[in-house]
Length: 468
Ligand SMILES: [Zn+2]
Image (tube, rainbow, N blue to C red; front, side, top):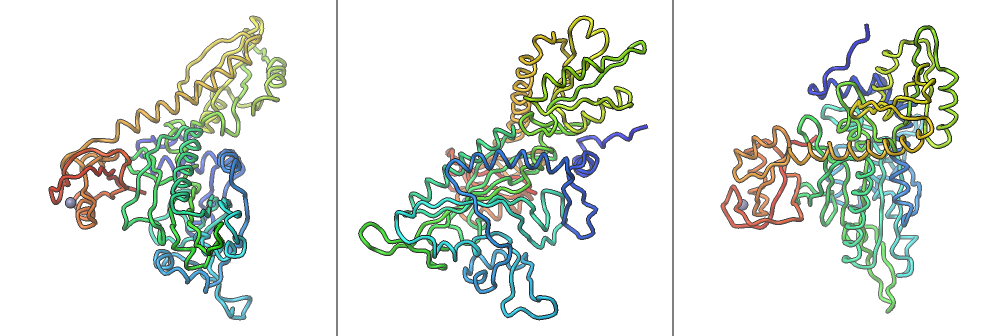
C-alpha cells in the first residue's frame, strides 16, 4: 500500500513531505538550514533559472565575485551593516592561524562588488553598467528554517547590480527590473503583486525598496523578488564616481535586485495539489510520460517506442516500461508533476490512436497518431494558460478591500487586506500591532480613504498580510 501525501490543506506537512517524496531537496543534511538538491530538484531549478538568465542576458552581463568579503569593506556602509550584522557568518582562521582580516561569507554582495566598480567605472561612457551573478549566500537564520523559503544557505541567489549617471535613470532601471520580474513570474504562471516597502522595512542602505509577493496556500505571503534604488548611498561609501561630459566627477546612482530559490518554492506551492507537483510545461523536467497499457496479455510496447522516437526531439519525454502496474505508474508520474500522459494499449494501436491525460485537470482525450504533434502542442499551451488562470483567480479572491482593522484582521487569515494608510510610521506600526499582520507595502494605484488609526484623509493604499 502506497502512503498518500498529506492533503494540501495541511500545507506545511504537504510541502515538506512533497519536497522529500518527489526528490526536490533533502533536508536531512547534518546541519540546520542547509539542504541538498536532488538530481530531479536540480533539473527543475536549472530550468527555472535558465528563464531568468535568458531574460537578464538581453542587457545585463553575468559575472562572478568571491564568496568571502574582507571585514573592512563589509563594515563600510553603516546602515547596511546594521541590517545584516546578526546574520553574518565569519571566517576567522586559516587552519589554526587567526586571519589578519576576518572574512564574511556574503549575505549579499554589495560590499564585494562595489569596491571593484570603483576601479571599473571611470567615465560616463562606462554607464549604464548592468551585471548579475547567480551564487550562494549565507545568513545565520535563528527563526524556524524551512526548505527553499527560510534557509541559512541560499543556494541560488540571483543578484543584479547596476550603475547609472542620474537618480532618474536608476529609477527607470527599477521599473525595468520589475517588468523583467513580472515576465519571469508570468512564465512560471505565478500571480504576484508589486508594492513599495515601508521605510522601516526597506533594504539596509537603500533609498527605497520595491518587492514582489505571491500568496501561499495557507494565506501567508511569500516575498519572491526585490528591487532596490540605492541612490548614491553606496557610491559615496565606496567612492564609485564617473567623469561627466563636462569633466566633473560625480557619484553613480545604483540599483540592485534579487531573486532566490523562493521562486522554486512558489512554483511548488502555488500549483501543486493533493496528488503532488503540477508543473508548467516549460519548466517540467519531464514534459510527457508514455505508459504502455497491457490488455489480454498483449502490450503496445513497439508502438510506444515509435511514439517516443516521434516526440523525443521536440519534448522531454520518458517511456515508462517498468514492470509496475499502470496505476502505480500514474501515481508516480502525477506526483512528479509531469504535465501530459500518453497511454497506449493494443486496441488504441489497431485504431491508430492514443489517449492523452492532462495533469492539471485529469481530462482524457483520444487523439489520432497522425495528429499527435499538434494535439500535444495545443495541450501544453492550454495547461500553462489554465495553471496561470486558476492561480490568478485564487490569488485575486484572497485580496480583500478593507475599511477597518477588524476587517483587515479577518482578511489576513486567508490572504491580503487592502487598506488605507496615512503614511506615518507610527500609524503603520500600530496597524501591524492591532492586526497581527505586516504592512507589505504601498500599491502604485491610489484610492481616497482614511487612515484607520489617525483618521487622516489619504490616497495611499497598502497591502497587509502575514508574511513568511
Ligand atoms: Zn495615520
